[in-house]
Image 1: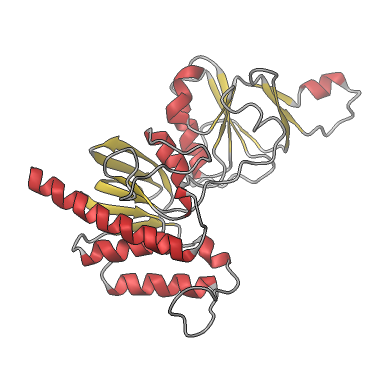
Image 2 (image 1 turned 180 degrees about the vertical axis):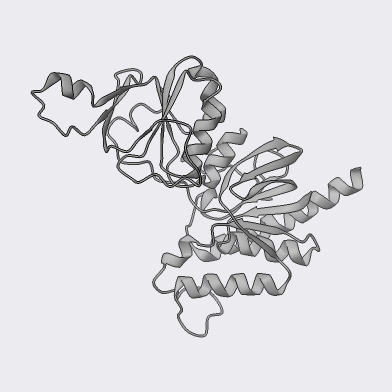
Length: 301
């Protein structure tokens, strides 16, 4: 079993890893090998830089520094985390267990700009299959997404729902294997429903006067589960039952610990100033707190 697993290799994740490594915890960092920092054109406002550098350069420098201290890296997509006291982390490269987890994958994903999606949140639109699958037992549902995260959510829903359809909203499916569910690749026009989701309306490729063909562009479903992109920190925390703030960020205490013991978070996923300096500070705090958490567990055994 791993002592400390850090999900995300941006400034917060690497900072946490550095302090966990110095605490002799041999941390493991799981990431897809990229960070939001890579998109920064030029970094000029971070302490200690002798000259400006790109976000990608700063990202690579941080990873090299962590490797020098013995931090281990695993390139995989995290599909979900479960457990209490100890945690099981599901990834595309297999599952592993950990005493402590630090979430540091950045801010919450933006909701796709589909009409009706925001308006029907909590009334058929959900972001957590584990949380809400029970409410759709015996009903037809859809998962919005085109990658491994969407496939994972579909598998979570399958034992409860009567039928699960994956809707890619015009994107090509990007699954590691063959999907065992119907896949609709049409562009979504809107989510239908007044007080509750009743279906998904796809962009018509026929004349609106053709009533029979227009009906074929509607997928009747009772629920739509948003799983676009990858599972972000807030999504993982929500699935586990951790409390989120009103803005959808992970609620943490002064030690960067969530409402679930042993589950920490740092960086953009906690809200506030979206800057490298803030992410590094919170990562350091989370790393130190995680080390203390693991040591306390060992003493109490």
